[in-house]
Image 1 (cartoon, rainbow, N blue to C red):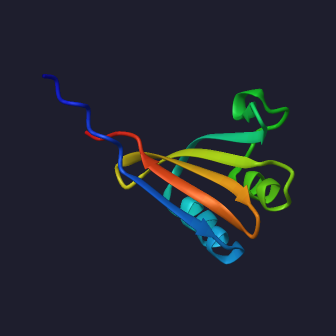
Image 2: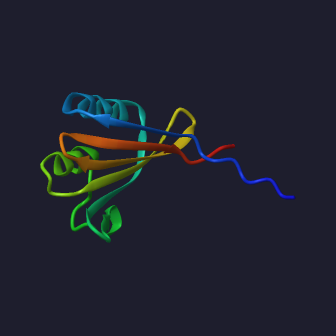
Length: 104
């Protein structure tokens, strides 16, 4: 019988505005952002490559906080690993789901 591949470590939390700002500062200071994708609504996504102007982390998070987008996915390198943070707007908070993508 073949063993299932290991699952990527995952973390999730609900963030208030202050914690979201701290996340922005941490990523800006210590991460190499690889890609930002906006979730516009059910089935609608807009990646950096498709955006009319280059998306940056600050603008993407502002769009999320103001309700102009439903979610933001940020892929980045930090601490010698590649990560994916998905931030989803929820009533009263932002839901963060973080996955470490490379296991080796």
